[in-house]
Image 1 (tube, rainbow, N blue to C red):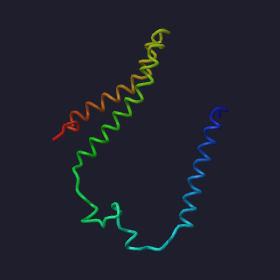
Image 2 (image 1 turned 90 degrees about the vertical axis):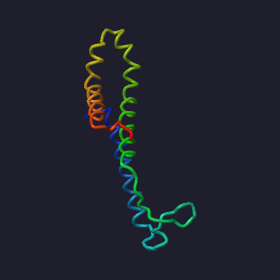
Image 3 (image 1 turned 30 degrees about the horizontal axis):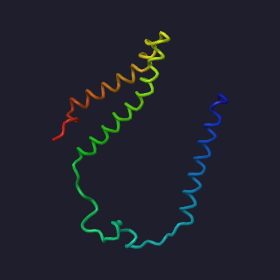
Image 4 (image 1 turned 135 degrees about the horizontal axis):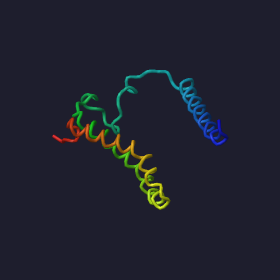
Length: 123
């Protein structure tokens, strides 16, 4: 293990320990009494009307997931694009494309797949 990884692992270990500690404390010290009023959903002080389980079109969920997927991938592209000029000036443009090529290929294949499956159609 390199010396640079030790602080990162230490921070991860401390974070996991704190999370486990606070989850255990809330479980042990928290109230255990069940109450039907506590089980109802809270809607700004107004008693809830109807059922909580409403039906919604699954297309909204799929579009949101696709947006997040492609939006995050473009966020990962931004640092590469900003550093591409320095790679080109150093004569390492082929290396920069080879490093990012598989990522771009997966992105394009995913986009074509969703396009063919009709995931980008709004009906």
